[in-house]
Length: 191
Image (cartoon, rainbow, N blue to C red):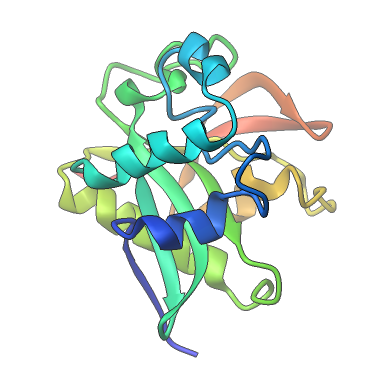
């Protein structure tokens, strides 16, 4: 299996990873943290969320990266400048410093493809994408689960060990808790 990670420039592939099974169903579409305004996030419902993602996919830089096994999309990672996300104002996840870091906040692997190292490929690909766009550093906000099982619905933030294996180091604690686990700020300096 040769996984290739590419910019998320194909809306249909992004929809495969993030969209609901029914077009009218409410789904995150990975917008909850991507949008600066919680008002905009709450106002977008049903198909409007997908249309907002369609707009983001057309922008430069794209809203993240996709992992492919041949022609089949098998994973997604959201990565973008922190200033363009709700992490810019998040009180529970503090700023370490004034560096214009990129945030990597969501890593998803399709069912049937998990346990094959694709999450690692996605993190590496997201870092390379950020580096190619001039990011001085990338931050992730995973759970510090100390090896304990994380519920799959909350596993999208990743684990501390996932980020450590990609070369990230702990930069700070947060007051954010997900699935009963504290979240930490993991950072990889690209300078």
